[in-house]
Amino acid sequence: MILSALLFKAILVAFLGFLDNWQADACSAPNIREKEVNEIKVIEVTSGKDVKLTCQIRTAGQTSKPRYYWLKDNQTLSPSSHHRLRLKLYRYLKIKRAKKEDTGFYTCVAVNDCGKNHFTMHLFVRISVEGNPRPTVKWYKDGNLFKERKSGYRLYWSRWATMLILKGLVPSDAGSYMCNVSNSYGWINHTYKLNVHERTRAEPVVLPMENVTVYRGENASLTCKASSDSMPHFQWLRWFPLRSNGSANSSADDSQTNM
Image 1 (spheres, one colour):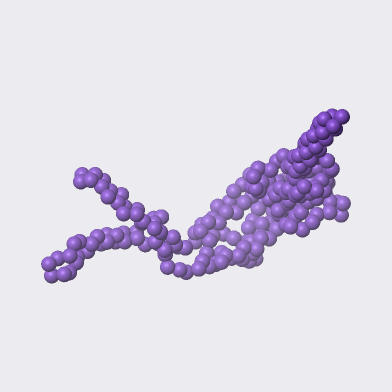
Image 2 (image 1 turned 90 degrees about the vertical axis):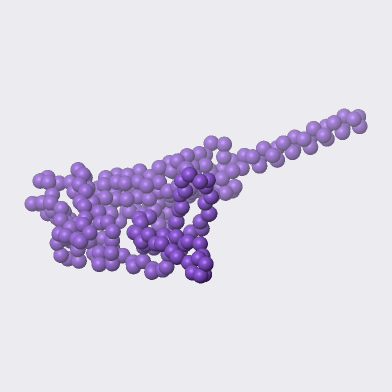
């Protein structure tokens, strides 16, 4: 009897330990299928079109359903209070007839008793240039027709969108840029505010270098790297051994080198 009681007790302890471990293993934060590490997914859509932001939560094997909600630019979204938003629980957030103001960062969040998981998407809404007759697109800067720029610019056209590309920006490029789309039946426009900050002026910093040793007849490569906010100017100096009079000579190769 004593042996049977001890055996029963040992089996019971083992079973309870297994049960505790099983419960610990089963408890985990919600799993998001689309999430890849912590990368932000970029999604583009043309204004007026529907877009679906997919965030599927795996609920199989979970002891309780996770709490599921969405953020836009770190502010809680309430789909029921937005007539163009449709929420499919644990699946996606749908935006109907996307507008320019829908552009932003959207984050789905899932929380349960074991932890929290989230997935962020960056939504860009492009201006549609659809129309019949085909619309005319004009860009304005600070209320004046945008025609030229010293560093040049490029206009990108597609069936549904137009894009103004400015490269090598300087402070004088700052201002309000308006895209005006019109045809014989009417017009629409949207204005962008562009700010250009001046770079901080600072001396370049030479990055750590290593000495180079070669055998006679071999080639040597000397690398000089510098960290600078603007294009640095490089100059190489070669110092010769001291002469008998105690002076030293140097030769310089004064050249502009691109980083």
